[in-house]
Structure formats: C-alpha cells, structure tokens
Length: 409
Image (cartoon, rainbow, N blue to C red):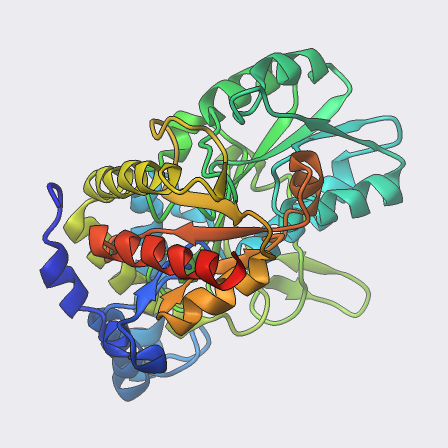
C-alpha cells in the first residue's frame, strides 16, 4: 500500500487476531462500525482507573480531572472538523440522536404547515424518520432528490426542487450503500440562497476523509464515534454558532440549567444547555484517542488508501460475471464501499457463506429501504473498507464469492 504502513497498523488492532471458524478474520463491515486500536482500548481502562467522576458538579480532584478531559474532547472535536467555536460541539449518543435532536428542537419550532423538507433518496432511515415525524406533526411536505444515470445525486433534480418553501435540506455526506460522496458545499450554497437550513449526516464521511464544517457552511452536522475507531455511545452534533440561541434544549434536567423556579427555568449557555444529565464522559475521553490515532495516520492518507482498495475491489468484482454491482462505476469521488448481489442468491445466504470463510460483510437493506426500492432490489451485500484493510482482504472476499457461486450453481 502506498499511503500507509498496513502491516504495522494491523498489529494495533487486537481483534484482527480472532479466528472466526478457524479462518483469518477479514473484517469488511466498517460502515456499520469500526474496530478499535489498542490505544483506544487502553484509554477506556485509563479513564476508569484514573479519572472516573462526574463532570462540573464537584470541586474535588477526580471531578476536576474528569471535567478537564471532557472539555479537552470538545476542543479536539472542534479542531477535527474545523468548527469555529467549542460551544458548537454538542455530545450525543450517536448520529441518530443528533438528527432527532435537531428534528425535535429546531424542526418542530421552525417548520410549519405548507413548508417543505428536502431529502435525498439514498438517506439512511435515521435521516428520514425524524423528518417524517416533523412533517406529520406540522403539516409540512417531504420531497426527495433522486439519482442520475451514474448513481450520483442529481444536482439538476436538486435545483429544480429547491424553492422558498424548502425550510430544511437534510442530506448525507457519503452514502452508506453506494459510497457516493455528495457535493455538500454546493448543496449548502444553493439551499442558503433560498433561506433554507442544511443538516449534513457525516456518519460515513468523518472517519474516512477530511471534513471542514466552516468550508461546507452547513448549519448542522452529525457523526458517530464508533464509526471512527472510538467507542459506542458517543456522538457529535455540530450547531453553527449563529443558531445556538435559536435552538431550544432537547432534554431537560440536571446540569443544563441556569436557575430553576417553581413555575419556570432558565438555561445554561451552549453547549451545557444541550447536554442534560450525566453525559458519556468516558466516551468523549476515549474519542480523543481515536482522533489522535486517525490524525497520526492522516485522513488524506486514509482516503487515498481506501481509494486504492476501492479501485482494486471494483476491478476484481467486475471480473465475476455472476456479481451485480451497484453505484458509480468510476472509483473517483466515491468512498470505500461496494454494494453488490450474487445472481440467484439471497444476500443473507451470501453473507452467511462468506462468514464461514472468515469474511465479515453486511447484508440487508442497510437502513435504506427507499433506496432499495429505487434500485429495484430488496437487499444487497455490502463490503466496506477502512484503514486496516488491504488487497489480501479483497482477494479473500472474491475467493469467498466464487465459493458462493459453487454452492448455488
């Protein structure tokens, strides 16, 4: 591999030594969740061995350390996505919670009867269901932007559907099925011309490529720690600084208050007003180690590495005449995800046989049923790459698919 030392990196991930069914583990389900390097695993232990205490609420030694670590994580995330202010970084459980956060707060406050919410047909259910809820509750209308003949988002369709009625555009940065990378800067620029706000689902982009929220100029941006080497249960919601006072609290309770009276309350400034109750302090702390690891390798290097894997994988799978590929044929401007089906074989059967060979892939609708219907299939198999994958992993996938073919020929 040209961009990273893959052999050294593999040694950093203890789980890669696991032998499923006595075979070498080939982990190709990274779009669902990534594995964790030893530094991240040790960071979790360190938190509970040396720092464990609640944040903000006590002046004692451990609480001070824990609070400092929690706020350091906020600062690290701010720099990681190039946000302007720490106040814009809100910790949540995951991308799903972050999107629901904006739907239940900003959405329910600002979207009204007759307004429109514009989505893309390739969205994850997490970026559809919250807006269905808002539309139903407020009498708004959902509209979808479809794909062009090359499986990319049709900007022609997007421009035609934008109007003064659109109050929010909610779009993914990278598709978790097709790997397409949407032109989020252009989307935001056009949406803002009409006065619409923009929410970007960055769950699949942040772990794999440099992200600059100021450059994108989006109003809201969401992503999850567990898809970028971090622990589960920690997510991030970015809220542009000029909207912080406009967005009401999502949850109400401990820590997010200024003053509480018998019949009303006032709230703390952002980000505290958005983080009611005891937050996932250890998750935020461990996320620092995940970011450190990613930045040590470099997101540009990771993106190039996955590009090499994608190009190699697409070429190898095109040679299999019994495999149907979905998504753009050109690997350029596409993330490290390959969705496919084997002729005459259900995706779940494909995944089960691959598992017997030690190859871990995803099968199903990938929480994208509208996209599946648009593609005309009930489900696909998905192989998704990350920084610890190499050409041998793809070779193992291809050999596994040949065995699938033998089983069902």
